Length: 203
Image 1 (cartoon, helix red, strand yellow):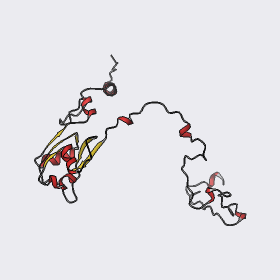
Image 2: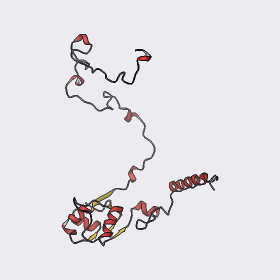
Image 3: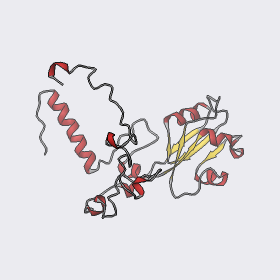
Image 4: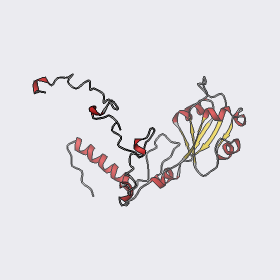
Protein backbone atom coordinates (compact mmCIF):
# COMPACT_ATOMS: atom_id res chain seq x y z
CA UNK A 1 0.00 0.00 0.00
CA UNK A 2 1.26 3.44 -0.97
CA UNK A 3 0.61 6.70 0.84
CA UNK A 4 -1.71 7.90 -1.94
CA UNK A 5 -3.83 4.76 -1.55
CA UNK A 6 -4.78 5.57 2.06
CA UNK A 7 -8.34 6.89 2.02
CA UNK A 8 -11.27 7.09 4.41
CA UNK A 9 -12.48 3.67 3.30
CA UNK A 10 -9.09 1.93 3.36
CA UNK A 11 -9.26 -0.86 5.95
CA UNK A 12 -12.92 -0.21 6.61
CA UNK A 13 -13.88 -3.79 5.78
CA UNK A 14 -11.51 -6.34 7.27
CA UNK A 15 -11.80 -9.95 6.16
CA UNK A 16 -12.72 -12.19 9.06
CA UNK A 17 -10.31 -14.85 10.32
CA UNK A 18 -11.46 -18.27 9.03
CA UNK A 19 -10.27 -21.09 11.26
CA UNK A 20 -10.36 -24.85 10.85
CA UNK A 21 -10.15 -24.72 7.05
CA UNK A 22 -7.11 -26.95 6.47
CA UNK A 23 -3.46 -26.83 7.42
CA UNK A 24 -2.56 -24.71 4.41
CA UNK A 25 -4.47 -21.76 5.82
CA UNK A 26 -2.23 -21.54 8.89
CA UNK A 27 -5.27 -21.81 11.16
CA UNK A 28 -6.36 -25.39 10.50
CA UNK A 29 -6.31 -28.48 12.70
CA UNK A 30 -6.20 -26.96 16.22
CA UNK A 31 -7.62 -23.65 14.88
CA UNK A 32 -5.25 -21.46 16.87
CA UNK A 33 -6.16 -23.06 20.21
CA UNK A 34 -3.04 -25.16 20.66
CA UNK A 35 -2.94 -28.77 21.82
CA UNK A 36 -4.97 -30.11 24.77
CA UNK A 37 -5.76 -28.21 27.96
CA UNK A 38 -8.84 -26.31 29.05
CA UNK A 39 -8.18 -23.56 26.52
CA UNK A 40 -8.68 -25.93 23.60
CA UNK A 41 -12.11 -27.08 24.83
CA UNK A 42 -15.49 -25.60 23.96
CA UNK A 43 -16.99 -23.20 26.49
CA UNK A 44 -13.71 -22.34 28.17
CA UNK A 45 -13.42 -18.87 29.70
CA UNK A 46 -11.14 -17.36 32.33
CA UNK A 47 -10.93 -14.21 34.38
CA UNK A 48 -8.98 -11.50 32.59
CA UNK A 49 -6.62 -11.11 35.57
CA UNK A 50 -5.81 -14.83 35.76
CA UNK A 51 -2.08 -15.37 35.23
CA UNK A 52 -1.93 -19.15 34.92
CA UNK A 53 -1.77 -19.85 38.64
CA UNK A 54 1.08 -17.55 39.61
CA UNK A 55 0.44 -14.81 42.14
CA UNK A 56 -1.70 -12.20 40.30
CA UNK A 57 -0.41 -8.68 39.89
CA UNK A 58 -3.03 -7.11 42.13
CA UNK A 59 -2.16 -9.48 44.99
CA UNK A 60 1.57 -8.88 44.47
CA UNK A 61 1.10 -5.13 44.67
CA UNK A 62 1.59 -3.61 48.15
CA UNK A 63 -1.49 -2.05 49.72
CA UNK A 64 -1.14 1.27 51.53
CA UNK A 65 -2.86 4.59 52.03
CA UNK A 66 -6.26 5.55 53.35
CA UNK A 67 -9.80 5.28 52.04
CA UNK A 68 -13.06 6.81 53.20
CA UNK A 69 -15.04 3.77 51.99
CA UNK A 70 -15.57 2.57 55.56
CA UNK A 71 -17.25 5.85 56.48
CA UNK A 72 -19.81 5.94 53.66
CA UNK A 73 -23.30 6.92 54.77
CA UNK A 74 -25.76 4.11 54.13
CA UNK A 75 -29.51 4.68 53.85
CA UNK A 76 -32.73 2.74 53.94
CA UNK A 77 -34.48 4.31 50.93
CA UNK A 78 -38.28 4.16 50.80
CA UNK A 79 -40.48 5.61 48.06
CA UNK A 80 -43.63 7.55 48.87
CA UNK A 81 -45.51 5.17 46.58
CA UNK A 82 -44.56 2.20 48.76
CA UNK A 83 -45.61 4.08 51.91
CA UNK A 84 -49.04 5.17 50.63
CA UNK A 85 -49.71 1.71 49.18
CA UNK A 86 -49.26 0.12 52.63
CA UNK A 87 -52.35 -0.44 54.77
CA UNK A 88 -50.76 1.28 57.80
CA UNK A 89 -50.60 4.60 55.93
CA UNK A 90 -53.79 4.52 53.85
CA UNK A 91 -55.21 7.32 56.03
CA UNK A 92 -51.89 9.11 56.44
CA UNK A 93 -50.00 9.22 59.71
CA UNK A 94 -46.48 9.64 61.03
CA UNK A 95 -43.53 8.34 59.01
CA UNK A 96 -40.34 7.53 60.91
CA UNK A 97 -38.04 4.59 61.62
CA UNK A 98 -40.40 2.96 64.11
CA UNK A 99 -43.54 3.11 61.96
CA UNK A 100 -41.74 1.90 58.84
CA UNK A 101 -40.12 -1.00 60.74
CA UNK A 102 -43.55 -1.96 62.08
CA UNK A 103 -44.94 -1.84 58.53
CA UNK A 104 -42.05 -3.99 57.27
CA UNK A 105 -40.80 -1.37 54.82
CA UNK A 106 -37.35 -1.11 56.44
CA UNK A 107 -35.43 -3.69 58.41
CA UNK A 108 -34.01 -1.85 61.42
CA UNK A 109 -32.44 1.39 62.69
CA UNK A 110 -28.88 0.46 61.69
CA UNK A 111 -28.99 2.90 58.74
CA UNK A 112 -30.23 6.42 58.14
CA UNK A 113 -33.68 6.71 56.58
CA UNK A 114 -34.31 8.52 53.30
CA UNK A 115 -37.73 9.17 51.72
CA UNK A 116 -37.82 9.29 47.91
CA UNK A 117 -40.47 10.95 45.75
CA UNK A 118 -41.59 8.14 43.41
CA UNK A 119 -45.32 7.41 43.51
CA UNK A 120 -47.38 4.48 42.24
CA UNK A 121 -48.05 4.24 38.47
CA UNK A 122 -50.71 6.70 37.36
CA UNK A 123 -50.40 8.75 40.56
CA UNK A 124 -49.14 12.33 40.32
CA UNK A 125 -49.91 13.63 43.83
CA UNK A 126 -50.40 12.43 47.40
CA UNK A 127 -53.94 11.91 48.64
CA UNK A 128 -53.07 11.51 52.34
CA UNK A 129 -51.48 13.74 54.95
CA UNK A 130 -48.11 12.46 56.17
CA UNK A 131 -46.01 13.76 59.07
CA UNK A 132 -42.46 12.80 58.08
CA UNK A 133 -39.60 12.78 60.60
CA UNK A 134 -36.54 11.16 59.02
CA UNK A 135 -32.87 11.76 58.33
CA UNK A 136 -33.30 12.78 54.71
CA UNK A 137 -36.17 13.64 52.35
CA UNK A 138 -35.63 14.41 48.67
CA UNK A 139 -36.88 17.75 47.35
CA UNK A 140 -39.47 16.06 45.12
CA UNK A 141 -40.83 14.05 48.07
CA UNK A 142 -40.89 17.16 50.27
CA UNK A 143 -42.96 19.06 47.70
CA UNK A 144 -45.49 16.23 47.37
CA UNK A 145 -45.87 15.89 51.15
CA UNK A 146 -46.24 19.62 51.81
CA UNK A 147 -48.69 20.08 48.90
CA UNK A 148 -50.88 17.35 50.43
CA UNK A 149 -50.99 19.22 53.75
CA UNK A 150 -48.33 17.18 55.52
CA UNK A 151 -45.11 18.28 57.20
CA UNK A 152 -41.45 17.33 56.87
CA UNK A 153 -38.71 17.40 59.50
CA UNK A 154 -35.26 16.30 58.35
CA UNK A 155 -32.98 15.44 61.27
CA UNK A 156 -29.97 14.97 58.97
CA UNK A 157 -27.20 12.41 59.12
CA UNK A 158 -24.25 12.49 61.50
CA UNK A 159 -22.20 14.06 58.68
CA UNK A 160 -24.81 16.81 58.27
CA UNK A 161 -24.71 17.58 61.99
CA UNK A 162 -20.90 17.67 62.10
CA UNK A 163 -20.81 20.06 59.15
CA UNK A 164 -23.55 22.25 60.62
CA UNK A 165 -26.07 21.73 57.81
CA UNK A 166 -29.70 22.54 58.55
CA UNK A 167 -31.64 20.25 56.22
CA UNK A 168 -34.92 22.08 56.89
CA UNK A 169 -33.75 25.49 55.72
CA UNK A 170 -33.33 26.76 52.17
CA UNK A 171 -29.65 27.47 52.85
CA UNK A 172 -28.01 24.06 53.18
CA UNK A 173 -24.42 25.21 52.97
CA UNK A 174 -22.12 23.88 55.73
CA UNK A 175 -21.68 26.27 58.65
CA UNK A 176 -18.90 24.28 60.36
CA UNK A 177 -16.21 24.18 57.71
CA UNK A 178 -13.89 21.18 57.81
CA UNK A 179 -10.29 21.47 56.63
CA UNK A 180 -11.28 20.30 53.13
CA UNK A 181 -14.24 22.69 52.92
CA UNK A 182 -12.14 25.60 54.21
CA UNK A 183 -9.64 24.86 51.46
CA UNK A 184 -12.40 24.75 48.83
CA UNK A 185 -13.83 28.04 50.14
CA UNK A 186 -10.42 29.72 49.97
CA UNK A 187 -9.88 28.55 46.37
CA UNK A 188 -13.35 29.86 45.45
CA UNK A 189 -12.57 33.28 46.96
CA UNK A 190 -9.16 33.35 45.27
CA UNK A 191 -10.77 32.63 41.89
CA UNK A 192 -13.28 35.46 42.46
CA UNK A 193 -10.46 37.83 43.41
CA UNK A 194 -8.45 36.78 40.35
CA UNK A 195 -11.45 37.53 38.11
CA UNK A 196 -11.49 41.06 39.56
CA UNK A 197 -7.75 41.45 38.95
CA UNK A 198 -6.87 41.16 42.65
CA UNK A 199 -4.47 38.84 44.44
CA UNK A 200 -5.69 36.94 47.49
CA UNK A 201 -3.07 35.57 49.85
CA UNK A 202 -3.50 33.12 52.70
CA UNK A 203 -3.28 34.67 56.14
